[in-house]
Length: 488
Image (cartoon, rainbow, N blue to C red; front, side):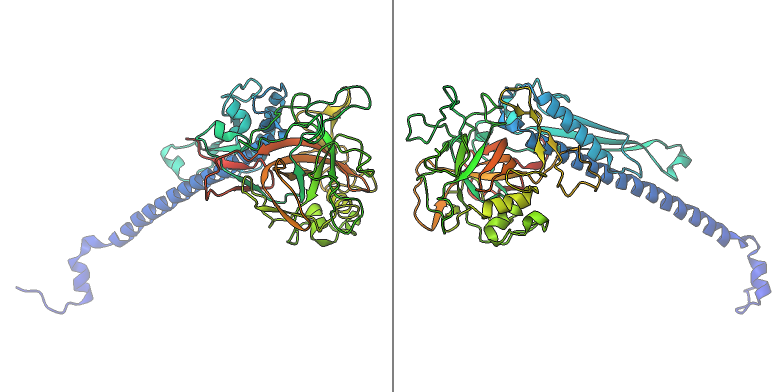
C-alpha cells in the first residue's frame, strides 16, 4: 500500500523518530572545527607577525652597526694597520644590540641579539687581516625571540614557539674596491654634500720638516709638493690609516681660494693649492690648510635651522652649508658632472654664516658647538679612537633626553665634502666643470670670521675606477653609505 501523498505533521514525526537532535550535533561539530581553525590561524598569524618583527629588528640593528663602522674611519684604514678597531667593533655591537632591542618581537624585547663581523667570524675585528674587510666591512645581526605567546596550539602540547631573523649590512667604501672584486666599482652619490670643492692635496703628507715654523708641503709646482688625497687613476686612498702614517684624524683648515671680500671669486692661487702663505692670503690661519672652490648651488636647501645663529643665512650657497642641498648631485667618477661657481665668494659672509648656523657656534672660533674629543696626552693632541663626540652647550638636543656632558653618535658637525681632480684643471671666470674623484668626511671644529673652517678627517673615500655605464649610484648622507645586502 502506497503512503498518502499528503501527510499530517504527526505522521512525518512518527516516520523519523531517530533523526531528532542530529542538526544540533552537526552544528556543534562544525562550530568546533571552525573555532579550531580560527585558533590555529590566530597562532599562525602571531608567528608570522613575530617573524616580520624579528626581521625589522635585525635590519635596524645591522644598519646601525654598519653606520658605526662607516663613521669610525675604519674604511679609511683598509689594511687595518691601526690597533683601534677592536673598540670600534665593541661600539658597533653595543649599538646594534641597543637598536635591535628597542623593537619588540611578539610584544616583548628580543631574548637575544648576536652580532658577528664577517671577515673575523666573531665579535672582535681587531685581528682581521683581510684587506677587503677594511674597505667594505660587513656585520650580521641575528635576533631571536625564544618564547612567543600562543593560544590554541597548546591544546596539542605545542609550546615554546620561537622566531628569529638575520640581516647583514655593509659599510661600502668604493676606494680602490675594483682591486678586491670583479674589476668594476659601484659609484656613490651622497646627499647634502657641502659646496666646498676641495683640491686633491694632503696638507700633512709629506710630513712637515724642520723646527718651528715647520716647512709644509705646497702645490705640485713647488719644491716640496704635497701628495694627493686620492689616486685619480684607480681611486685608492693615497695614505690610508690613522694620523701619522695615514690621513684619518688629520686636522687642518679649509680656506677659500678667493680674494677676500670681492664681489665674486677672483682666484688667489691658480690652481688651488695646500698650505698657502700669509703673503698670499693674509686672512688665512696658519698651515696646515687646503684651498677649496665654491660649488654651484642652484637649488633651495631644506632643514635650515631658525636658531639665533641663523639670522644671516641667505641665498642658496649659505643655505646649502647650513642645511641640506638634496638636489645637487655629487656623483663619484662621472666626468665633468659638477660645477665650480666663481661668481660666488664664500668669504667673508656665506661660509662663516652658514657654518655657525649648522654647528650652533656663536662668535669667532665660537662656543656652543659639538666637540670632537682629543687625546690631550699626545703631542700634538690627536683624536680619540674610535671617534667620540661630546654634545655642545647650544645643541638643540639638550633638554630632550641629552645631557650637557653626554657623548653622542651623530652631529651636524659631521659633513661630506667633494674632492675634485686638480691635476690638469684650469679655471676661467664664471661656471667651470670639474670631475669629482672622491669625498672627505670631516668633523667641523670651528669657523673663524674670515670663513676659514677648521676640520678633522673622520673618513675618506675614492671613486674607484671602471665604473660600469648606467650603474645606479648608492645614495646616503655619507660618502661611505651603508646598505643591507644578501650574502652570496
